[in-house]
Length: 198
Ligand SMILES: Nc1ncnc2c1ncn2[C@@H]1O[C@H](COP(=O)(O)OP(=O)(O)O)[C@@H](O)[C@H]1O
Ligand SMILES: [Mg+2]
Image (cartoon, rainbow, N blue to C red; front, top):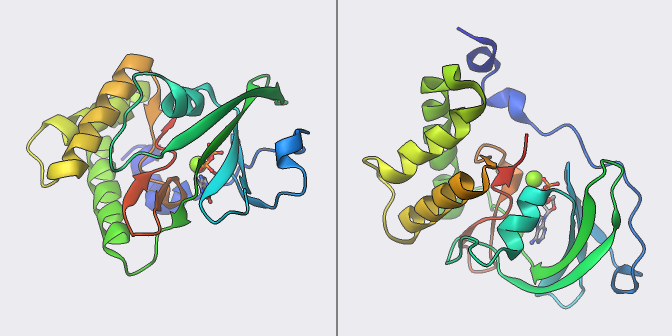
């Protein structure tokens, strides 16, 4: 058993959080910070519909703005790209995006059940391919997206679109952290932060 297998899903609770101060921008003045991860800061716009998301990871910026980004029911809707608003301590640029407001998965919802099932299958596939090192996640996703699968309809399409994006942009999938899968007000599962760069 290697270190990855031994760790188990419990070890994947996100620890690191972006240490940067909020970059100054007129649109962010007075806005409440409602989320922060390793690469992004999220602010409530206050209209109940949208948030401002400051992203620093190029993987997130591509996912949310590229012409050929994955789209459809399970991907976040981005309304406006407000441009570059500074540089993170990591060296990456801060881009300010205006996008749909999403919500944590409600514990007993069908979206939460779907996310758990997806994470379990993805974890299982990762274990199978762990000897491939850095390529593990991409191969695991590819297997789930294109092999025999229990996922159907829009969910299957979303996995295929994510697989193509991950392949094309050489980023890595992250389908394990619960806070990277969110839902719309109507309960739809949304891949809010499904990729990262090593
Ligand atoms: N569209 C959104 N609406 C509301 N909250 C969000 C949205 N996107 C992300 N968040 C919150 O902000 C946190 C950080 O966002 P995330 O996309 O995971 O950034 P990172 O790339 O830093 O991991 C998430 O865990 C979530 O709680
Ligand atoms: Mg995240």
